[in-house]
Amino acid sequence: MFKYFLKRLGLALITFLIIIFIVYVLQVSFGKNPFSEQGLKDAANKLSGGDPSKKIDPLVFYGFDKNAVIRFWLWLTNFVSGDVGIIYSDTTEYSHQIPKLFFEPLKWTVAVSLPAFILSVILGVSLGVIAAYNRGKWIDSAITFFVTLFVALPAFVIAPIIVLITSQAGLPFEFKDPRDVPVDITVASLITPILVFTLSSLAGYTIFVRNQVVTVLTSNQVLIAKSKGLSKWNIFKKHVLRNASVILVGTIMFSYIGLLSGSIILEKFFRIPGSSSIIVSYTENGEINVIMFSLVFFTSLSMITLIFVDMSYAWMDPRIKIANSENSKNYFVLFKKYLQRNKTLKTINLASNNKGGE
Picture 1 (cartoon, rainbow, N blue to C red):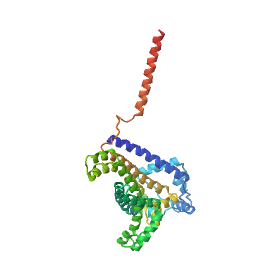
Picture 2: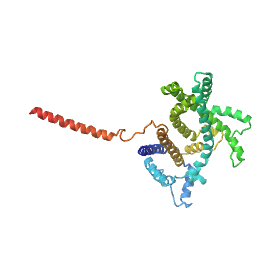
Picture 3: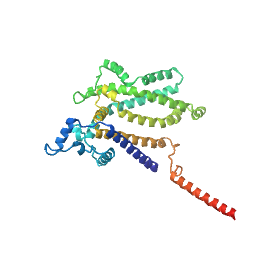
Picture 4: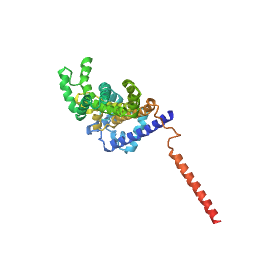
């Protein structure tokens, strides 16, 4: 298990480096220059200390004159050493504090996405199981119609409808900053976006769970369990839940990564100062250090989740065996054996020819 973990970790690291390299090179090659004309003058004045006799080109000073590969290597070495870079077009307190700029709005994305994720999973799994156990009946049809409706409607269409309903209950339409209003009003302003996020992701969980549970219910093991006289609860607990949860857990974990990355449309709609707005804003300005910091965070999170999900399959179901070095394919060893066989065959053929010549 530990050797397999190390292999997965090494593969994830290689994948991570390839992703950040490609994104960095593309951004450098085709992205916008973060310095405006006035920004270049201000940066040159700042670097020269106000001395007009010292002419320092900010583009050369910050390495913008180098090719993309060299710039990537310089950025990577600085990032590993703890220097995540600066924001070139920003003169506020955040210009040298990219982590603070990124993680402060991320808390509001989490404040909306986490409750929405929990609610959508609970409701989606429950509705999916109910629909599967009542397949072909009116309950199944009603749930299927309900989730199909939300699959067909995009989030920006659902949002105004939910706003009209919640506004009648006196809930705020836009996000209220706790620095300007009491905390209870801020919490109330998050209810509507949480409902929209929940309904947007609920349909996917419901359909997925229903299909998985139906597959298990029609399998041979459940039919055998029914013939043995097991109760519905025991069948659900020992067979349905166990088999469906193996795939479900992996899907749920990855779905939250997508939800955490935020929906720029919904955050703009509800005026939520989340991470998506920050990332889009600085991407438009060509701030590569902000882009790369957010990319490193979300890519690392995805890779860690991928490894955890992969390992969890074996923990949840003992029938799933992790491949080891004995039964996995070692292509170097196979190639070595291939060369050895060829050498042996040549030796046999040569001996046969010599014997025939005699």
